[in-house]
Structures are given as structure tokens and as C-alpha cells.
Amino acid sequence: MTGLRAELARVGIRGRLANRIAAELDDHLACDPEAHLGEPRLIAERFAEELRLPKTRRATHLGFAGLVLTALLLGSLFGGSRSLPGTTAVVVPFAGLAIVLGAQVSFVGGMLALWGARRSTAPAIVQRRLTAALAGGLLVLAAEGVDAVALHSWPKLLALAPAPLLVASAAELRTAVGITPVRAAASRGFGPPAVWAAGGAVVAFVLVGSAFAEHSWNEGVTRAAIEGLAFAAGFLLLGRRLGIRG
Amino acid sequence: MRAETLKGHLDALVLAVLADAPAHGYAVIEELRRRSGGAFDLPEGTVYPVLHRLEADGLLSSSWSTVAGRRRRIYSLTRRGRSALADGRAGWKSFASAVEAVLA
Image (spheres, chains in turn purple, cyan):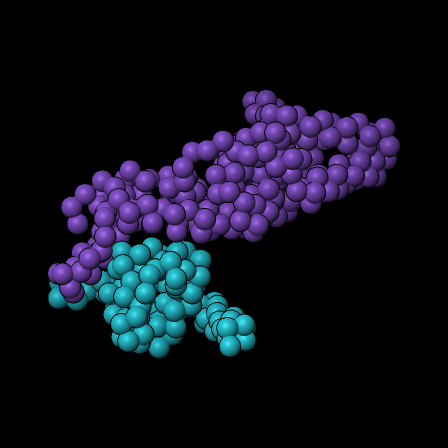
């Protein structure tokens, strides 16, 4: 169809998906050369309209599965005391900091994205949340890899296993973003209560867990306060972009 | 029949056509036209986006085949698709009987 590819590209449909659509419509015209498929512009817009939500949802489910696996492997492979010889004394703490920050961003972003995808929130908002979650998740994976190499702890490289899921999610997300018109993320008040409840639960977990692990309530309160401040900072920095702050 | 009239029911209709046998887009459109006695003569370009969406939602799966040297995308129903079709049939019966009760 003349002009179809250009129209598909105009609405953000490119690459394999565009090739597939063109091949299907070519086959249709071969079956019936008199077929009236309609204006290429309308066909392209219809494809974008029909696909932006399911593509976003699929990217979110893939990404969330990858992030859950990342969290499970992080919990089982990392932790405990480590000796830090030579340059690893510098590298490993930075990797640890990246893991802590990335995990928090991916946790909040992933929960918000999944919440939005299941409630059919505007795809643009879900996509922003998932972008933040995937960025956090990939930061965690990169830091885990650096940590494993720096400490020559090769079994820890197993923690990179979720990478294909996160990459597949990112690829699907890229298509979804391409076919979604750019609009300002609408304010969602203070976001879903479940996310705030989960954030509060994490702070409480840090408080109690640290207090018991370190045998010191002062330590628990300090770490919980840092956790709470990190949540507040994340809300201020990313809240508008994630559609939870007006 | 106008496409707008079918809005909300097109998913179930497409799933019903594919419940009998896997088919490509052209065959789906022809079968819709045949089973409806020509009433569902849809703008052909509107059915392909629906097929893609149903696949993205996991209700259909698809694969390439080659026919007369051309690539052809064949769609088939997944288990979730069969379940969605059963829901669609039940929903339609309930809706149709309610409309019938009001109009009668």
C-alpha cells in the first residue's frame, strides 16, 4: 500500500512490527486485489490506538517479573560481611549504594506501573513509571555485576539472570512509547494508597530489622529515618514524572 | 452494518471465528461476512489492528506460514482466548435478553 509505511512511521510503528503489518496487508491485497483497506493514515492510527495499552501492559508484566526475580536473587546472593582489599574498597561501596538506590526506585516505579497497568491508567503515565523501574533495575544489575567482578565472586553473576526479561520489557516499552502521543502526565493526587502502605511497610521493616540485627533501637531509628527521607526525596524528584504529584 | 454498531462485540466475533480453526486476516474477515449473511461487511483495515491487540493481550497467538511464495500470518486462539470467548458469549446472552426484555 502506497504510503502505509510512512504513515506507520509517523505514528511510531517501525521495524519488525511495521514489516509485519505491511506483509499482512500485502497478503490481504493478494487474496483480493479489489479490497478496500482504507486510508493508510487511518489504518496506521487505528493500529497505534489499539496497541498502545496492551503493549504497555505487556512491557509492564515482563518488567515486573524481571524486577521480582532481580529482588529474589539480590536477597539470596548478596549480603553478609565482606573483606574489601585494594581498589575494591572503593568500588564495592559504590556498587552497594547503586544497588540500594536502584532497588528503591525500581520497587516504587514497578509497583506504580503495575498498579497503573491493571487499572488502565493513561499509557503515557504507566510508561514513565516503568521507565523509572527498569532504569533502577538495570542499575541494580550493573552494580551486582561490578560487585561480583570486583570481589571475584563468580557465582554472584547468577544475579544477572533477569537481564533478558528486563531487556525484553524495555524493547516492548520502546514500541509502546513510540505509539503513544506525548502528553503531560496528569496529577494522580498522592498516588495509590497501596504504594504508600508498601513504602511505610518497608520503613517499618528497616526500623525493626536494623534494631534487631544491630541490637540497637537507635540504629534502627536512624536507618528508618534515612529510608523515609529517601522515599520523600524520590517523591519530590520523580513524583511529577511518575504521575503521583501535581 | 456500521463498524461503530459492532464496537464492543467485535472481539468476541473475531474470537468465535478463530475458535473453529486457525486463519489469516483475510479469511477471518470473509468468515465474519459469510456467517453474518453479509451484514458484517467491515472496513477491512479495521480488523487487523483488532487481531494485533487480541494477540498482545494474550488471547490469540500467531505464526508465519508461506502460501504461493507469500508470507501469511496465521492466528489461532489461546487458552485465555477460549476463556474470553466463553465470557463474551455469556455477556452477549445477558445483554441481548435484557435488550429484548425492554424492547418487547
